[in-house]
Length: 373
Image (tube, rainbow, N blue to C red; front, side, top):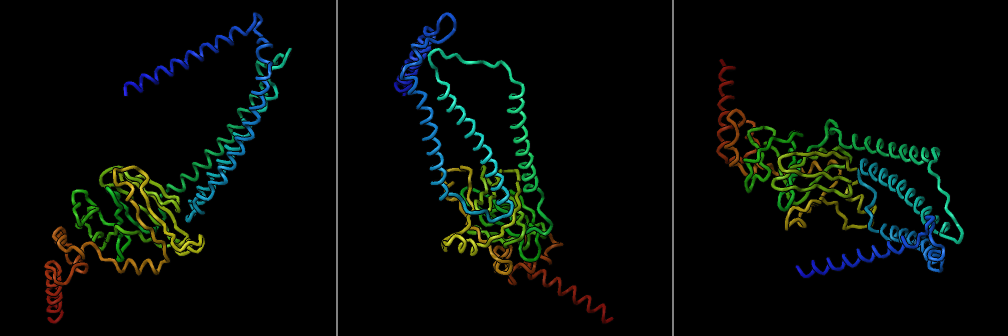
């Protein structure tokens, strides 16, 4: 390694010496009046250099256009969400403005280098100031940039606003190296509280069963299902290191930060089946990926996203078991005053469910005795 560094140092020193010697030659070529020596700069090499500017302009433009056209086959299809299409429109408008400015300024730059190359007995004219020209090239870009910033800010404000009332709440939690999705169940649209201290092998997101809204929560680690045409309020967390939720076809991207929950809401307006037909690809599937390198298993953080109609989505949700049903031992964490409400989610043979049923029967018996009297 030391030899490589030493060799690079020698090469850079040689290049520096070459540059200094060339600069000295240029200085020697300037006469006492400060005008370049025509014999030095108006030969055939000067004309070749001038012509090469135009050749580079034409070839460079051709190569850039070809590269763009060839790359279009790898572009994502039209976004499957309204905010995604708005984002794409702003992107392409910005790219068009920047590309037009780049092509205009560089075309003028290369053409002027060719057109006004050094010629015998030719002296350049200098304009120390031109207020009108300076005003134009200052005001015009300033106005264009202001419009771009304002439209971008409006889009960002709308996209990052609070989710509409009635939006479907879904939580996604990143951990090394997979995603865990939590749903609020079928009885309400409210996710229960969580506590990182409650995380274990079965309760991977730390659902807190002291909150009655958590009783019907269920999780999935293989795929996420969402209804089409309905606002989705995505609540995002990370269990260990920094992750990033990326749904490319929806143009959804938000970091999952340990200890700092984030959020993003969107509306998917194309089902998975619609995208299969639109792209003529029956193997198509939406996916959720992690775009933050989070460790050696980062590549495996991929989750299928199923977008379906409302009825199919509700049917799928009804088929899922709440975590409390799958692991009734968590019932020991339920406060005594909520055990009756939790009984419906517990297997009939569980101790808590039996106790709750007995308590309910006894209460009903007392009520009956009172009514008989």
